[in-house]
Length: 135
Length: 294
Image (cartoon, rainbow over all chains, first blue to last red; front, side, top):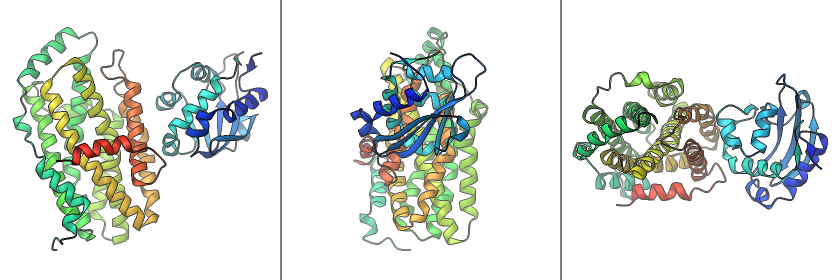
C-alpha cells in the first residue's frame, strides 16, 4: 500500500530502505551528518510545511522522523516545494536540482555536500524504492 | 638564490621541464578550415543557436585566459618573497608564458575566424563568470601582492592558488575544454579550435598538477591552512555552477548535465588529490599525466 510522502510512516520506510541498500552503504560511507529534507509551504494543495530528518552515519541511517520544519536541527537542510520533491523521486537528478536552485541548501556547506554528490544520489535512489503516495 | 641539485629533481622542476618540451605556438595552428566551418554553423544551425553557444564559450575562454594571464604574477612574487623555492618560481614563470599563449590563441581566433575585435567580449559575461573568473581573482591576487606579514601572505597565497588552479583551472577550464572538445569532435567541426583546446588542456594539466602538489605540501606543513582551501571552494562554488548553467540552451551543444557533473567531479578529484576528501582522483591523475609526459 502506498505511503504518504514525508509522513511518519514514510520516514521509517526511508530509514529501512537506506539500511537495506548496499549501494548507499558504499556511496554514503564518508558521510556522517544528519540531513533534513523540508517541504516548504507552496500555498498549493498537497504536502506543505513538513520535514523528514535522517541521521546518516557512515553508510547507514540511525534514525528518521517526520517533524515540523521549525524544529529541524540537522546541520544540512535541503528545502523545496512538494512538486520539486516529487519530480526528484520520479527520477529528476537531485544534484542538478540543487545546482539550478530548485532545491535550496538552506543550512550547511555546499562544498561539503558536493563532495558527497554520489552519496546524495544513492540516498535519493533509496527513497525512490518506497511506494509513495502524493496527495 | 641558487637552484639546488635537489630542486632540479623536484615535481615543480619536472613540470617546468615538461613545459619546455611541450611548448607550442598559437600562431602556428592552422585555422583555414575553421572560417568555412563557422559560416556553415551560423547558416545551417541558426535554429539551434550553435554559433551563439560556441561564441559564448570562446568569449568565456578569452576572458578567463586574459584574467589568469594578468593575475599569476602576484602568486609568483609571493613564492619568491616567502622563499618557497626557485624550482616553484621556474614553473610559475613557464605558466605565465603559457597563459599568455592561451590568451593569444583566443584573441587570434576571434580576429581570424569569428571576424571581430575582442574589446566588446566582456559584455557577454554574466555576473557569475565575471565574479569567479575576473573580479574575485583580481581581489585575491591584489591582496597577495599587498600583504607583507609572512603568515598572512602564506594564507593569501594558498587562497590564491586554490582559486586560480583549483576553482578556475581545474573546475571551470577543464570542464569547459572537455565539454567543448567533445562537442566539436563529435561533429567534426572547427579543427583549429579543437587543436587549440587540445594543446591548452595539456598545459592546464600541468597547472592543475602544480596546484595539487603545492596545496598538498602547504596544508601538510601548515594544517591551519586546510580551512582556507575549503572556504575558498565553498565561496566560489555557487558562481562556478552558475557559470556552467549559462550554457543552458533549448538545444545545448554540450549536454548540461554532463557538464555540471564534470565540474563537480573535478572539484571532488582535486580535493581528493590534495588529501582533503575521500574521493577517487584517478581520472584527474590520468589527465595530469597527459600534461606531464613528454
